[in-house]
Length: 212
Image 1: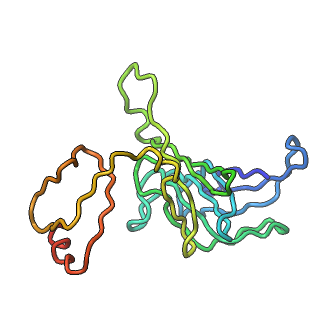
Image 2 (image 1 turned 60 degrees about the vertical axis):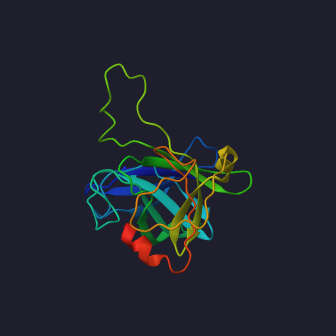
Image 3 (image 1 turned 90 degrees about the vertical axis):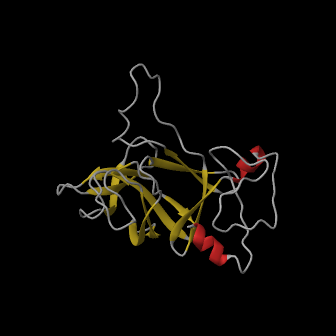
């Protein structure tokens, strides 16, 4: 099977399914889904897989228009989830959601790991900003960290792959720290990027709200 992104005569995006017995001669099977000018125009870089009992089709629509806080103007990555009939080649869409809310994220693809996990890696760049780099630069953009995918309540859930835990070291812990309307420096903690696990005890809610 081959999933191909394209554009309909009305200018809206679509995903087309093709089938082949030998991997050389391909036959059109069905149009699985289309934008109907609701979710961008050209649909690029589609993926197609089963996950936790759902069929998942991530797509990368161009020329999206913002819809509240779920999508932004420009190029997005959208996840279509639903069910798929393998006999009739029909996909029934049940949910549409953003895959990543950042501006520089596009064209993700997934792979199935030997242990059955579905892992996603995306392009940490977008077409709008890809041309903005100094002259002579040998490369521009980068790939995201791999993300493990699951489905919860029909939506795509992402977490960093568990292998990244091997790179954590020199753990620093602080207990019984009161945070309330004050700047604080904790021994051993500094830098621009931190990976924190914070546990809040009952009774601290008022202080946390004040910090916001």
